[in-house]
Amino acid sequence: MKTNVRDAGGVQVVELKGKITIGSGDVQLRETINKLVDSGKKNILVDMKEVTTIDSSGIGELVGCYTSVTNKGGKLKLLHLPPKINDVLTVTQLITVFDVYESESEALASFRG
Amino acid sequence: MSLSSRFENIEMVQHLCSKLLEGRDVPEELRHWILMALREALANAIKHGNQQDTTKHVHLEMDIVGDTLAISIRDEGPGFDPEAVADPLAPENRLKTSGRGIFYMRTFMDDVRFRRHASGGMEIVLKKTLGAVNEKEEDRA
Ligand SMILES: Nc1ncnc2c1ncn2[C@@H]1O[C@H](COP(=O)(O)OP(=O)(O)O)[C@@H](O)[C@H]1O
Ligand SMILES: [Mg+2]
Image (cartoon, rainbow over all chains, first blue to last red; front, side, top):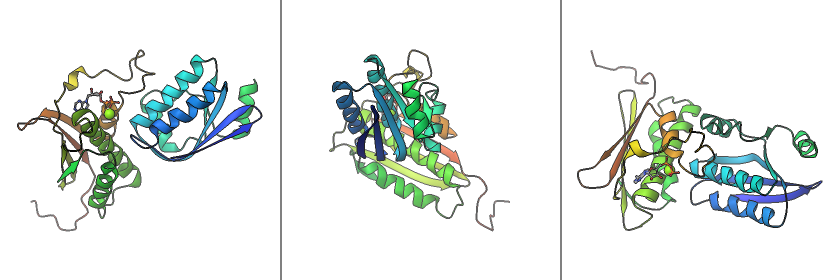
């Protein structure tokens, strides 16, 4: 997996690309988010558009990231969820846990609200 | 076939399964979910079963019989009680960072069975009906 982080008016947009699967990408996701949390960033938007595959380990890490950001008083939201990842989150009743956006501008605005 | 216990082998097996499904007119969506269930079963055999000990093997059989895909995956680990696995949908488990793999297998496959193998280790058998058989002449009258 490749990650790219950019600042969009105080929101950290984390762009993920490739696979988030056991032994490849799962730990990397956690480390990327932890680094942001440790440096005091509270608003995180994870762009999933280019995630090609996710497995239960990747989903677990995503949930773990959500929890650690929330526990620090921050917000982690999802952007551009591919349909199959949406399905995988839905069957495990996680889709309602996450705030999911189709448009980046709407997502960014939601952090200000 | 047998594989060493490395996560890198998961994709190779997914490719093999994909090959096996070729020519069966399996819709892309269905193939995707089968490959995900396969991935989860292999990951468990490697991680929980063989505990990533690369000298231990994962034993694999895949076949299509009639209109049903059957996959058997056996590890060389201590085995476990599938009845004792926590429900990932229970409110207290909803935000756990693990415990969803078997649930995904059960969601995406028609039949998921576990048994302790005679030679030790745990065996999981996954089955999925693929729909109408493609062959023109099927002599099973
Ligand atoms: N092949 C196996 N050998 C031993 N234990 C297993 C095996 N497969 C699954 N388990 C047990 O079942 C539990 C649930 O598996 P799973 O639903 O895939 O979640 P996870 O892998 O995230 O823990 C595992 O934590 C493990 O205790
Ligand atoms: Mg698992």
